[in-house]
Image 1: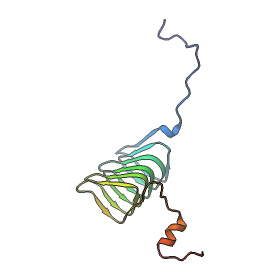
Image 2: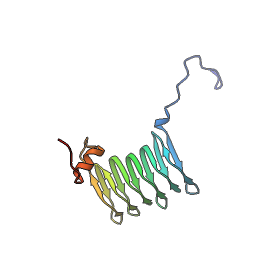
Image 3: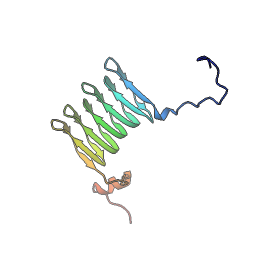
Image 4: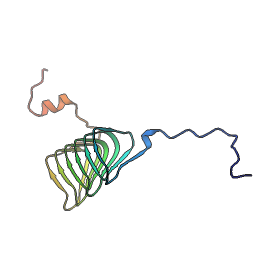
Amino acid sequence: MSLLARRSGPTSTPTPASSGYSLLDAQLSVTGDLDTGGSLRIDGKLEGNVRRADTVVIGVGASMTGDVHAREVVIGGTIIGNVHATERVELQATAIVTGDIVTQTILVQEGGVVNGRVLMRPPGDIPSAATLHVSDGATSSR
């Protein structure tokens, strides 16, 4: 059989974009919001929000200004903005977060800095906007 022979079977379908991996390398600076169903690694500079992602890694030396919404967030660089993770946040020893963190679980390595609030929610307890207003002292009509 030849290495260049055509295959007679069905061709494989491409994998969905949601399983992809995107990289903003150290020489790249981006202004604008990002939206992905896959993983995202930021080693450069991002001025904008990550509106949806599976996993976001902000590498050592990277900087970001904006909010992050993902399943899991690992921070080694600097972020000015809020972090919303449905499952887990990890702050490495070089991480600096100026903003609030909302997650189920958090790991802060020695040296990691949070200048803001850390709000932890039990699994399955994603509060709605109405719940947040009620718990912040607003009255509800019952």
